[in-house]
Length: 325
Image 1: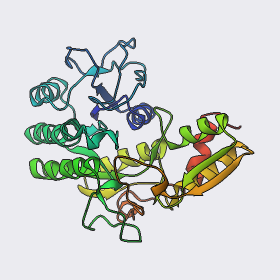
Image 2: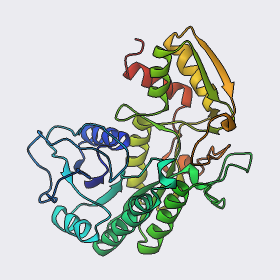
Image 3: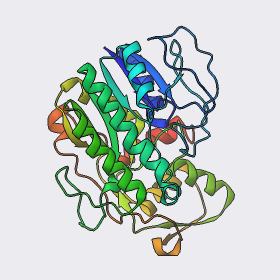
Image 4: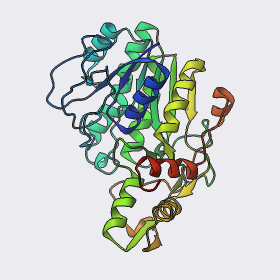
């Protein structure tokens, strides 16, 4: 199998590359490289020295350095450009496309909505068109933010989406365009993603704890953390089933931002004071859903297992960061 991975420089894309490497799966890692005019010109490359990338997709607010596994050159691909997408798929002849590219700046998207829709909606549509033309599967990632959080219990895949923000709207439209333009698709909704490859809630909490002895974290936003190491394994296992459709994927269980922060700080040995707060105390451009935890049925029934509990995932991530032994 050979995979074309878009947004490969993001935190999910980086761990997905590692998991492909562990399984001996060939892959072509691509991303939007600011200032680059190059295009994907071959399959698996021999070079490892690569230029610096500024985001996992256009205007996505990331300063993450380019990461790719030995033997694979991270190449430029703008998924919002249909011609470039078609050319990339034609030249690399992948067996499947995994789209990790995303505009994730939730608050910025309220004003910068056009770029959010380009990356989160038009880009997936372009990939779906190319995938359909070549008869290969497309795996695309969406978000729990397609829901308004007012249900009061975990969302099933068949629950009606009602996004509260431009970001959520752009991700929902991306879902709709994918299933309109190709039949062999996986739409996988993720929530509260964290991994070594980029800034995330866990890293922010650890950074803040080094600077302050008192922190306030909201206790009225509830969802399910999702560790990229666990996600990557489940993603490749799901892809191999050919059981197309919409899935929810996250570590089992759910928590509030406050509960998650408390667990992180306890494991890190922080001695400060953590104070629960309400979302209304923090002014943000975009509204967040209050309860967006997702029920992962029928993921376990499809791949044969459920992901580990979020506490276990958080502890393993902190060990990966060498916060403790």
